[in-house]
Length: 88
Figure 1: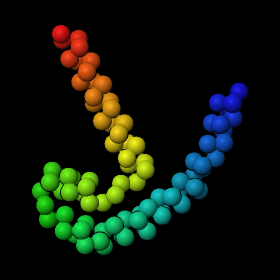
Figure 2: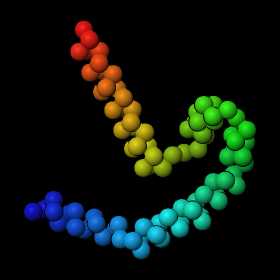
Figure 3: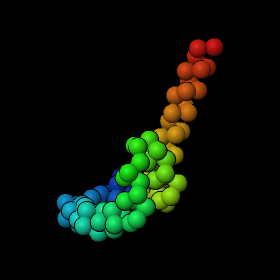
Figure 4: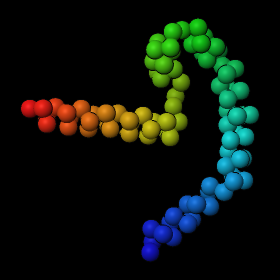
């Protein structure tokens, strides 16, 4: 079926070689670039909760990170709504 074929095509992006290349790119390119930014060095001096907020607003998150945060927010809201509607 179409879903199985899509899964097979999608699986090609997760070969050991491609995963290794992606991790190498993140660790040796993205992380050093982020660590060298002045804002990153400044936020390291802040307490952790404040640092998290500052980083959220000052550094633009990736599409993946936005999707992850939105999903987390929606799951928390759904859990909260379930608790309030079952308690009533």
